[in-house]
Length: 313
Image (cartoon, rainbow, N blue to C red; front, top):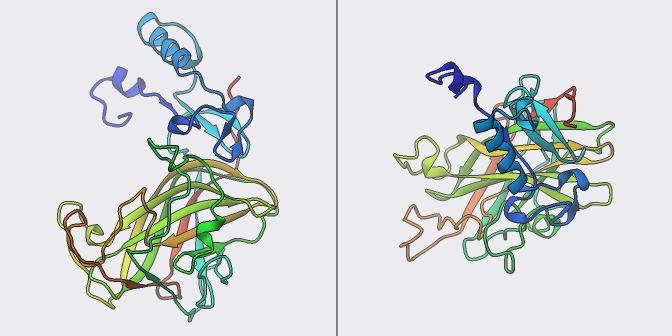
């Protein structure tokens, strides 16, 4: 809108407000995490202030910078000039393992170092009859059965059909703010399957806080409007939109990526047959493989922010 708005007022009139909570409820404690008193958000007051600014030309909080976000980890609101942040550096974290990244017991790692010539791939079996369960996240609207928000992901990370890649504990704080994406080189025994990704902040005590997640149904890997089945055993390069976040990974914390083929019931299960999931009467298990050698590097791309803008008063 800022680039292509028809008028100067339209181009200059865009505002973005991102808070924690939403369907998960107001702060400071949301899910399993206490985000501190600055996370409290009064929707009614913000709405009135917005209309006062818009229609009465009130010089209130909306007269400042046009982007207002809440930075988790630092647990503070902040104003920015634009979104995504111009100063954020796209940083690739490559997937590594010796072929056994399955679960927390595995040997998957994340590193900014590109893979060596011959790293063995990781493999798991996705069974639609036993999908990886949803634990927390941006959920609506049945908190009794599916509690939303940040929740400890270790129960799902204990499954062999979930690949786990982690960095070593960080030597200093690192901020990640903006869109997150994952490039995977994959193959499958099925003609259609899903690949999921989840970015996790691992605390020194082991608590695995979910930050953002995404999914790709492989038959829509090229176009949403034109599904195309896979050839079993063929290697495909996929890009998964892992949505956006703003989080400071504190010193001593670790970055973690989960890769699987289900996050149910937030996302409906892929039956792996290429049939419509709403009417399909059969399903099959899929053996899914993630390649991460030098020829087929797989990497998580994070927007790393070196400096911080001023916080909101």
